Length: 238
Length: 238
DNA sequence: ACCTGAACACCGTTCAAGT
DNA sequence: ACCTGAACACCGTTCAAGT
Image 1 (cartoon, each protein chain N blue to C red):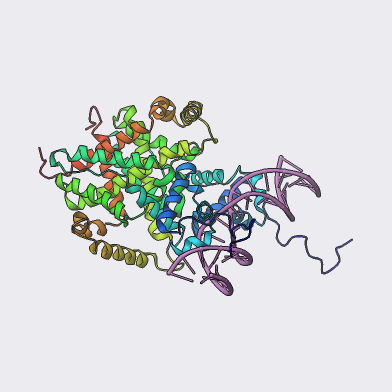
Image 2: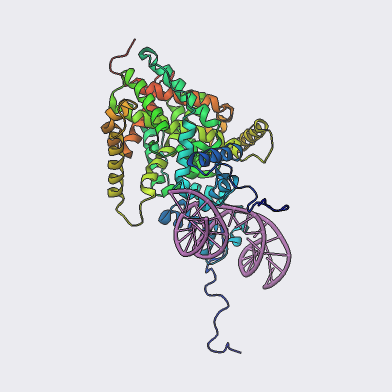
């Protein structure tokens, strides 16, 4: 017997794809990219997949694991140095740091997940491995390299997060650049109005404290760190 | 007329102190210290004060402002260097960084609030001012000092946060030290079991990557940063 | 001016029940 | 094995109403 006319399927739109870890992670990243990490809730991701929040728990142990899977998926976009050139280890490490920053910044708040997390998933491990390889090739002693990969990672995470904070809470559909400059101008006025006797250096250095954008800060920070790390190299490779 | 016997006051325990900003902040910090930042909710703080969440909004614009007020209150505990000794600016800056770390670490997650936040409240400004004063006295150029105060702040925040993550999610009433060592041992076993061909350096450096506690990491990071900053001093002060 | 109850629009996670 | 509805125990913030 054919089904009589006018019958509707029991559910409006059952997920065309069966639920999988990858589909969940991909959907979560889509929400992240368009609305930021705070919008990535179990309920929201489930809704986007046409199901309820409870269904996700068959594929993912909880919100924390979902976040880590998102991070590792994003880390897969980081282009690692093809071959290690011992003579250029510092530049290669700088480039890698810039590449990590670039990838993080194309995924909004994702750096928040990375902060204070021991890398254990494959892509995050590959990034750490690449950093260690560069430093070892450059003659950085193992103990120093191990500490440095941690310090550099902390810096990249914190910097990416700082970058995103300024543009994160912009009032819905406003030019991010203009919003940023308006905010910086507010900070400048506030610093200038501070009591000079209590904060002489801040008041005197308003321009310096307020002029540098995110790029300058990143370049400077990585530069300092590399100068410091390089100072531990036993036999310089030049 | 006296009140007849057996009457109870309308409410069980109306707040003995009238609600004030300071009382709210102090209560919030008490919750922070005992249960961590995530437990500091508007509802929880209100309950602790014997009232409802809506009552807080007469004294505080919302949760974000409450968090910033908590941070500034905590920052008031940071002991700043009494007098700047230009010859010892690096040691003094190191000591100050250690002092900030110490205070943050006595207040659980509080470093999370500091991350990606332009210091605007009085005590946070005083800390920034002290850092700038030390660097200026040491002959660090203004542009470098302005960038460095940002970089050093990012490092301290990220380090304090990392410190707290390991001890934060311990399963309720367990020895934090033992928990920490058990976790480190798990990480070590995991790294050792990794495929050597994909992660040769990580596998080879398990011990180095896994041996350093929070103190070593902090000392190392601050040391690198100061080496880098000092390399910008025009006329060394020795 | 300050405080409140109630409501609004959300959370993460669990669990018994279904297929 | 996978999926679901319903429930549990929470969130931050608003707002009309009270004092």
